[in-house]
Structure formats: C-alpha cells, structure tokens
Length: 256
Ligand code: SF4
Figure (tube, helix red, strand yellow):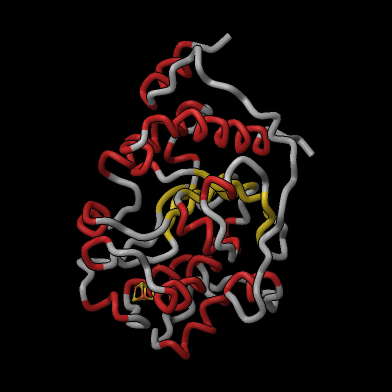
C-alpha cells in the first residue's frame, strides 16, 4: 500500500496511480563506453586524488589549471568554480551554479546546465522543473536536502542553448571532483545531454533510460532519465520517469 505522503507526491508529479507500471529494473546494462581521451575515459582511469585539503588556495582557473582540480577539497573547489574563466560562458553568466545538497549523499542528480532561474539564484533545479524534481524525490521518500544536485556546466549557456562539447570538456573536471568527493551510491543523470555526456554515448535518452549503467573507476551505478523540464512539456513520459525512480530507489535500498 502506498502511504499518504507517497501518494501525494506521485499525484504532484502527475503519475496516475492506476497507470504506472514497474519494470523489473534488474538488468545491468551497457557501461559507459568511454572513448579514449574522453572525460569518461579520464574518469575511468584517474590518478587517485590525494586527500582533500580544504585549505588549498584556489588555483588560477585557466584551462591548464584544471588538472589541479582533482586535488581540491570542497571549499577550494567551490572557489575555483566561482573564479573560473576556462570557457566563454564566464562572459555571460550572472553567477556560477556550483551544486547543492548533502556532500555525503547516496544519490547524486546530474543535469545539463543552469537555466535562467538557476543563473539568477545560483542554485541548480529551481523554478517549476525544480519543484517537479522535489516532488519526484518525495515519491521515493527523499527530500531535496538528502541528495546532491549538480550540472555538467556550472555557467548558463546564453539563451539556454545546448552546451558545446568544448564547454562540457572544460567544466567536467569540476563535476568529476564533486562525484569523487561525494562517492554517491547511485547517479541519476537527467536529460539527454547529461546522460549522453556522462556515458559518452550518442544514443537517445529513450534508449539510455530504463537500465543501470556503470560510471567511472568506482563503477558507480548510473540511471538515466528524462529532465524534469521535459516532463513538464511531455506528461506522458512521467510514467517512464517513475520507473526510473523506482530503479534508483531499488539501488539505494540494496543492502549489498
Ligand atoms: Fe568555467 Fe565551467 Fe563556467 Fe566554463 S562553464 S567558465 S568551465 S565554470
């Protein structure tokens, strides 16, 4: 039986209770298929970072300095992002959007890039998409504060255009360091661009979702799903997003 809170969350998402179907979710599918030299490949074979030192001074944040990012602790990492000029997006941002949540979270949610609301507020997944994400988390008994939320890009692309590969490449060391510091039990990649970038795949999101991938040397389980902004435009996809959440919840609750 669904409890009242979960039922309310599902209704807030827009899932009709009679219509949801659960997949068995047990398939452990393709891994990241990292290409040589790609960010995922670098993630798959990193030099283990030394212990984080929060007192480290933020580096100069030109492109050559990004190699140092894998050694930063939280405070230095946040400062490095705030001062970053490694790609052209620094010219048009209002502020960087570092990420938010529990640094010890079991679940890390990764999206594409800040939008207008995020650029203004300095926090990822705010506005209507953020509210829907919060409701989706509630449906699996999680609060926003229980997870960590970040984007691949820390600066908003002008007019919400898609990130360019060079921008994602430049910004990925920050995300990789966030993942390394958090060591999540599972990553939920929301949206086509986040899923394709993290998995180094050109498959559509409809084919990447619904299974468990593996990310990085830690073989962190990664589930891909639809972006909440897409779900707002395409309510019929909510049932599949719910299936993906169930898959995430199953991994989170797996005692092994
Ligand atoms: Fe730096 Fe990332 Fe912002 Fe580009 S998007 S300026 S790499 S923080």
